[in-house]
Length: 95
Image (tube, rainbow, N blue to C red; front, top):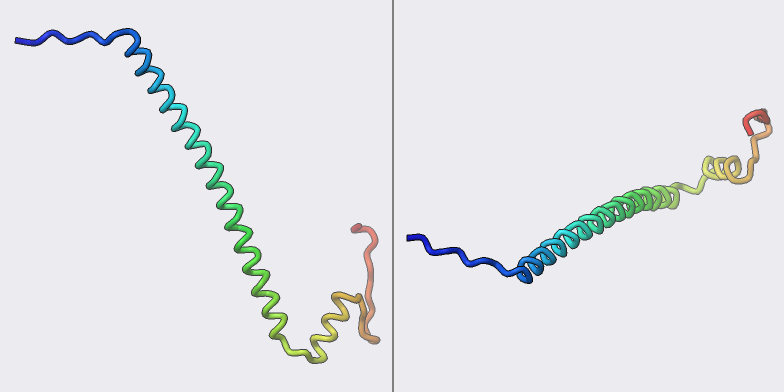
């Protein structure tokens, strides 16, 4: 024969309900924190890739020979100089 089921008291039901709600709230908060940390990780990974490329670019510049071609390139880019036979046109409309 079946044994009669014991009834759970009201305070026990309330305690179980509170525990379940607490667990659900904690799971949701952990999911939100996890999503935030994944976004941070992706942002940091992008920065790492950018700076890695930048370091490689600077290393290539350091390894470049210091010859006339390099000097002309720096004079044009950094100092806005030009060679005597060059004619430079400026477009003031694109400012």
